[in-house]
Length: 117
Length: 113
Image (cartoon, rainbow over all chains, first blue to last red; front, top):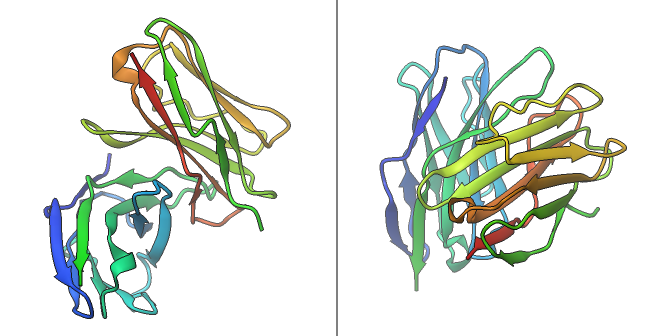
């Protein structure tokens, strides 16, 4: 079984600043994906970024980037130039790669990020 | 294109009643997942359907919960004899063949009184 831990229940940042959200995971799998999802008050879970475990290069998506440390089983999310619209709950999630190509997500408890003017 | 849709958006029901929650996945997505989000338990996997294969029901919390997927598209999650601990947001997600990203619907908030 896999576990995902997000140790920061809440984080605050001012607009235009940079913030980093932490995530660690535990697994015996060697091939897997990691994701960050964002859930604003609208409740819609939005995929922010993904990382394949076999890739050493950290994924980036515009203002969002990750620091993936496979040996340490760490997967942090950095948000640069924070915007008010980034205010949301952020979930880290783990998915093992199966032969069938499908698998389920294991989520952390989430970090509530508040961006203030 | 259209995303994953779920209905109803909100549902209030009395303890002991049965409820049905519906999910319409993204067209062409062959995998469909149900998750439950509650304050105490966070986000939990319930069940998933993969094409025509038998569903993985390993996450269903009790035999009061069941789900079906008709024609490889729309899915219905049924909760029988609802209990107050069933109160949660029920999220549906879908993914395309051999792709790993899951795309979520807006969820159904279920309140059992």
